[in-house]
Image (cartoon, rainbow, N blue to C red; front, side, top):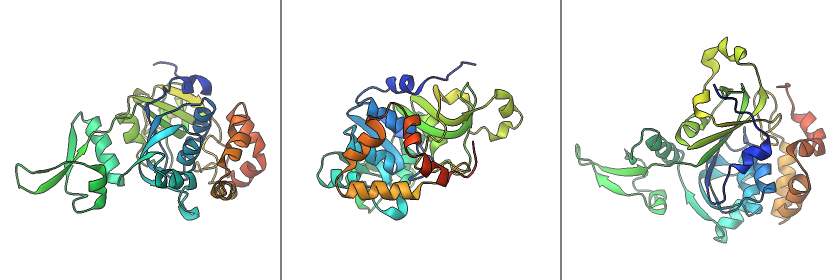
Length: 288
């Protein structure tokens, strides 16, 4: 097996301007925030972003001018409302937004996984989402029913945060894994950030807990608390106070100040964690 652990900056250098990146996690849970920070510091541009449910990860990338197209089923901070910079950018047509359902994203990834051009389904027929996505319809050669052709989706890079993995890329994701497993299997490259790197022997003792095997992982970065201010069960919950602060600042049009203070004026995500250490103590439930 191949040793795959690198520094955050090295992993980020593999991302090219204009590529399609896909972030794992779901809304304010287990988002790869440390990698998002590094993308912004690296001044990546013209990225296309795919996510099932985005939140502060998407919103920060928009505010930083890193992405120009988004494919998502939802972008918001759950009970705190829609992501403010995302909303402004879509309304002003600064970015291209393709609104999906969760199924249309999953079907597209599944099509790519099985090397099919599309997945057929009756879902979306009669909806405006079908009109906006401009997916093609056709008649079933068996029943003559009207079907939607969900085209394959193939991200260049999937970026996923996990609770633990070994140095070869065997990963264990606790709790809801959203579509992260499917995302990893359907993407050309996979970058994993992890709370902790453990010996392979720990994984061999309970092999069934390894739900993302090393076969699908290209690069690993150890990043404790790397999902903050989103949650990473069971180690820490989402940081409601920090997210409220972010929403307040962003609604006032001052996200640039937030990015400067929390990301671009800092050298690393560790510096960010030190800056918000009181917030981190408040939400930490159990050490990784």
